[in-house]
Image (cartoon, rainbow, N blue to C red; front, side, top):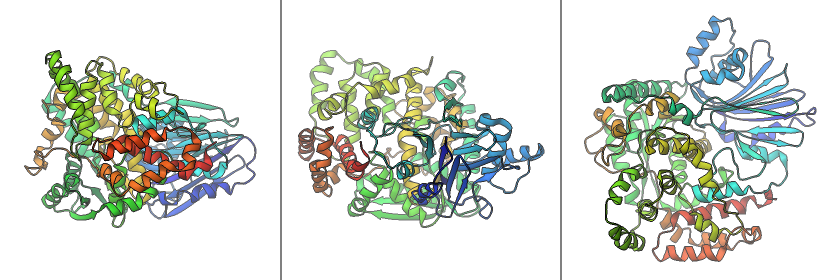
Length: 629
């Protein structure tokens, strides 16, 4: 696991030491080692978090004649099998790393090499003979990769901060990205907050020629793949396939030459991962949980029960509001772009805890998106029942009542979903899912509160093609694919990468093995949702892994009482941010309108999500105003 950077120039590089400045910005991604490769037209850099082959894994790594140089961020879980094949075909190795496997595979297959890789990765290969640079990103976007054209140079980096460190210029804000952020609370690929800087999309590669022309290629796109998969109506074979693949995925992700552990929330997904790890390892698994001082957000009792069942080496840490508040600014800053998923805060804290004990953790990320674990997936079933009610009852009683009820604290997510359901009951399947998927501002709120952002309905236009690309499938499958392609890449995996790497911890997600993703779409909808039971096949396939009461407890999610913090501990900070002159000078936000929204929130009309989005954006502006053109 590393961070990578690079400069590729039309002209001979005048100051190759700039690669050191890029590396310096990402020491947290790789505190164990650093390396550079510099030639006439290219400078490659990396920071290494040593996980496999600790003594010989120094990068860059080369092929036999050193005509190819690679810098690599990630892990390739099938590298040993690939290595055996390469050895049998005459390749010579100097290390036992997965990095060297990639460079030899590229030697054979060029850009097609990515099709053989099972793992999480972002890497760059420079071909000295052709003077070409090749970049690749894994199928679902577990590892980040930013790039831009800057005059006569092409720049790339694992984090945006490395690019900004050497360009030394200001960038206009990208208004499409602003609209995406305020609707979704994150900015999905290929967009970034700045015009002219982009993220490489998941499942894509680019080849940059010496004249800096770019050739883009897509080697894996889930919506297209889903259309070709046949569903298996046999519950027994679906369950066996799921178990076999997940066992294999966990086993592959337990390969490490350093201590590893697991995040254990007490939920279904992380419990299964810990259960499999405990079965595969002879030593007690190290597990990590945070206790929340606000009881309704605390699931540590469930995690403790799982830890006792599997005799793990379990560590808990109680977190109070002051601890979170003290770290908010640093966590927001680490994302480089506005990112307003508030679960980044507890994710950072559990990563900080794990980082004191291990360098690798396995997580349960992806289970909800693959097997329908979010309550929003029940929308299509609920709508059928709701539409069966008389129209007079729906519009004359239920709708006004739902919009007036002040839901108590802790029910913010459920309340927003219920309101969206009844207020959009005539919309098609995409529109219903879109309304529940977005956690930030509605289009009407963007129009009202962001007069400086041209509202063109871009979030809807951005996500609809993904939803519609899934043909001859249920609306649920279209919703799951959309959440994997957009929500995982732009939100969940960004959160996991940044918060873990802030603490120099490598996070591995067994559910996101591409084989499991493809298998999930051979499972019929009725096996994922059984009535109102979410993730039914996952619970059924691994029913032997749970204490009896765990499956009966409702899903809570990985959250903190951010609505309460905005009213109390963060109140003065929120007000100060809204008054900052730099925010006013941008002219994007109707500040009196946001202040009125905050007043509503304080009078018990919950507006947590839009307010947190404004808080994050204002914090980002305060720190980055000098970069905005």
